[in-house]
Length: 264
Image 1 (cartoon, rainbow, N blue to C red):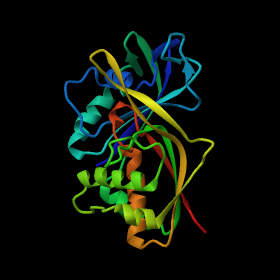
Image 2: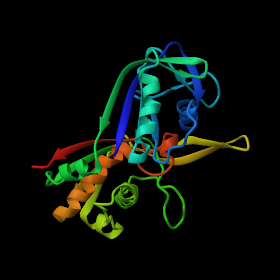
Image 3: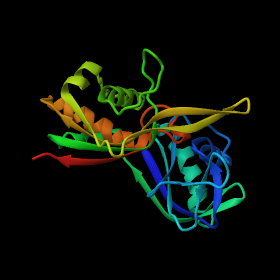
Image 4: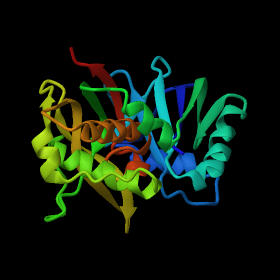
């Protein structure tokens, strides 16, 4: 049962965090719990570009800015642990502590849908355009080379999402064959927003570990598909806003937002 909590936060005072902050954010969020998640996605977002910190390889967070932390899980067995994790923030005097620094929690929003809900609603849409915004570096490993993709290609995105979906769904399994996806979908990236980027995902023997990927906006359009194909792709698209796309989603990678526009 996919569920996500979105926190609007603002720091009490300016401070710097390690650049490409997936590793740092993950550790701060999970620091006070003694259990592991398999499907937890965490991302730190802002409406504007992040400001460069005063120290090398850091990002500055300012009290004039409002930031967003998005947390989500897709595995129903992890829902209780997730509720415990997020309730720590919403009930803890409305602040979130990062080390010695505090964020005021301005707003908390929770959304939950079942796999059945997502799949059923998708059937009502006939020929929409799917407008993705890959908001944090999205790292999809090519199955042959193990190299991460640098472009939001449809045959990378949707088979990856189908794998995540099928780990949680037994009644509505989706087979997103790369050939079918390539033949029945088109991607139209908004080039002015697209770029390659990287995120710090780990520290190994005191050395930073970075993952490379892409960010930006991309619209996916259907091309003579079957009704079943359309339902499957829409379901995966909505699911992506909970699961994230690609690897290292628990370290800040692969956070997406989605707009569905019905075509005339």
